[in-house]
Amino acid sequence: MKYEHCIRCTICVENCPVFRVNPEFPGPKQSGPDAQRFRSDRERAEDGWVLLCSQCKRCEMACPCGVEPAQIILNEQQRYGKEHPQTPAHLLFANNYYLSALGSLTAPIANMIASSKMGKKAFRAMGISTYIPFPKFHFRTMRREKKILNRKTRKVAFFYGCFINFYRPDIGRKIVRLLSALNVDVVLPPQWCCGLPALGNGNIALAKHFAQKNASSLSNYIDAGYDIVYTCTSCGLCLMHDYPGILKIPQGKKIAESSYDVHEYIIKLINEGYAKPVFGEVPRKIAYHIPCHLRALEIGYPAAKLMAAIPGLECEILDDACCGLSGSYGFKKENELTAIQMGNRAVSLIKKTKAENIVADCGSCRMQLSGLSGMTALDPAEILCEALDIKDQK
Image 1 (cartoon, one colour):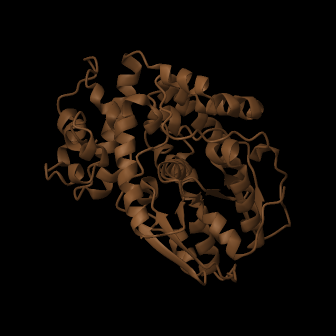
Image 2: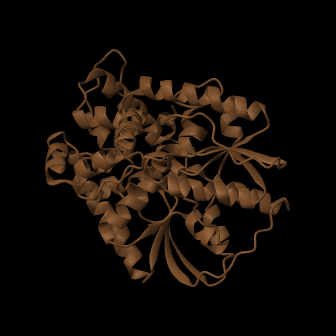
């Protein structure tokens, strides 16, 4: 912990979107380095307001001294979760992988229940917010996809994540065909939830369980010469930072060194002269919302660079506002007002651009921004596939 390096400059507080709208949250400085000076493992964790932190990581991006307030708070969130009874919402979202798998197997019934008045009433009774529509489960997940192998010299193992797998496998299939069109062999390795939902809901034991299973699978592919490619920025942040960090996964460093954001990987192929995509015209104006976890990855905005090469596409980058959902954070009823206020600020900035569509790398951001604005939200890969005339094959 680097809490002793904090110089109390309050820059982290100024950059915290939760602190701006929720007076009950004392901010990352007080919740993190300030409070850490007085915490003791011998005493029961009582500062429940650490759960109000959405783990957007903006405080860490702003800190000039290398202090990691969000990491300090995350550790305390785990301790608090161990020592206090968890709410039904926390338990459900920690086990989101299993619930999503069940929802996918029963997709028509699950979708009908989730969208019904009775279903929403039951969710709210469990402390789950329903102010935006739930994403629809899909029966045909990525696990049911076949391998696309053409013996290319570049080969990747695609870590597609829970959102793509259970809710938007159509985007996952497009990404597979996008990479294949760039002469890359793509395999779908055995995989489970990255562990971030469990970690974000105070269940570090379950997060480690998922991480260990993924690490064992992905390490085998890395040893066989595969690069790991992820599409969800939150999954990527978990692989890159939490596996070697708080989860202490032995293969974590190797996985972090071999993993790439899908758009970062495409730029790497272009820069090395391996791929030379020729983009067709896409006459449209888009508002590109930058997810907080993309900023936290510190890889720049690779999708924006690719979209800048598409003729006719006008792209306005918006990186000053958090969408407010932060995975399961905004779906908890106690965080509903905070999530809506943050989301509405992001939506107001988007609407000022007069864009036709919202584009965001994160499925959670797309859900929130589309739900609050009524606009269609797209993954950057959908724009790239449109420019390369790559269609989803049913």
